[in-house]
Image (cartoon, rainbow, N blue to C red; front, top):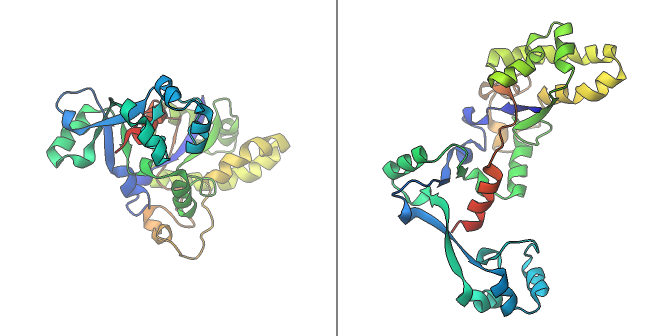
Length: 274
């Protein structure tokens, strides 16, 4: 099992992605009472599409559709003439996802209670990857040179915690225990972690080239990034929001990966969204 370090970005009120990640737009649930908000997808079977387009490969190429698709999803068909040719073969099927943006507050609250935490997509999920990457690269909270809110600490076989304990660094030394307990570090803990990094970087040199090669990366990810002159909304986040030269690591947690069915669900929601 790999261990990841995660930033509690939704607890920093001025984090540029916070409002997007807090805005739940869709949820997946089998509960009754939400039929009026159901999201449907329009698709054409591969057999029907091949009958309409004898040069099926050419159809896929000009519309940039993955050749391994299980059906032709109409929102992926870019050419108007192709959409028209397929129109009489279109079938609408319920995705199991419901649109929360069309609900009043009371109905939305019921829907969120009916859907599990992994069965939701947010306004952040609706961004394209270029927009996500741009926001992360400009955010002073981001791990690993602006790559996002999750950073790799290392595998469960990492010797870094053992080395940390050897040099009197108890928090990094307890990484595996913290991960198992899903412990969230306090701002005071995070300040102590930065001091532990200062101790461990020269300690790795003493431990040899292999230790430097394997474990310097995780330590560098924990360190704050150099701040550039304020030029974006992200740069307006103050040190009180756990950023800045000495506070960037505040409000960070050590935890194992928490990715489950979200990727498949997100793909379905994006594909079927109105």
